[in-house]
Image (tube, rainbow, N blue to C red; front, side, top):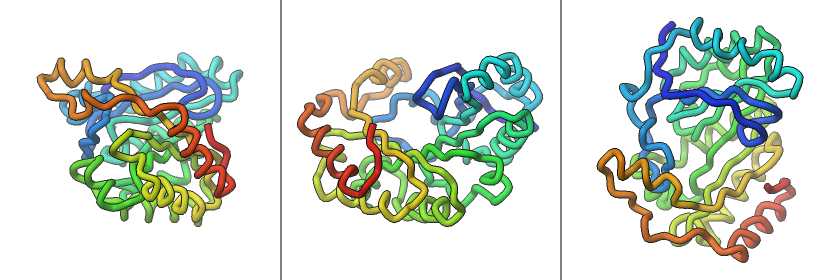
Length: 242
């Protein structure tokens, strides 16, 4: 099977437990204002890659990954836009005895069939916002309902979830919006942690290189007090925060 792979990397601690082989698949239906990888929006921006070729790359790191208790993470872009390729890579990685993780916004969660989720040990779920209007503003194309539906499905399946939430001043930091995200998290019993990611402008150069105007060029990172307030909101629903 052939997929479109933008790039791959080996990381520690941010894309799942242990050392991870992270494959970034090309193509995403969302256009988030704070996106740090606009170069992954279109499938044509990736390199046609067979599952055999990608698994060959993964196996080069297999021993190192296993020793660290790590695994394979499929990210993007949005890996569920290439559902069949994603399913096969995760399934074959699991057959190697590697821990598997799916990094997704959940917007295409309805595409994730039972076989794909059976091959997924952990879901890294990027919840953009808890308020539908804010979600639309952040993503410019998306709706909150599919992500919420997917989150509840993961809870029903007993699938471990790490939630990611990007804190952007003037965009996602409204107390009511943060509280709505916390309520959704509280409804999913398998959420193991929430990673609050303070907004930064490090991806602005990619927008410029593509001839695009970075929408949040004038937005400053959140101050420590704002970050702590959001931490407290998630701790209040009994979830560890990082």
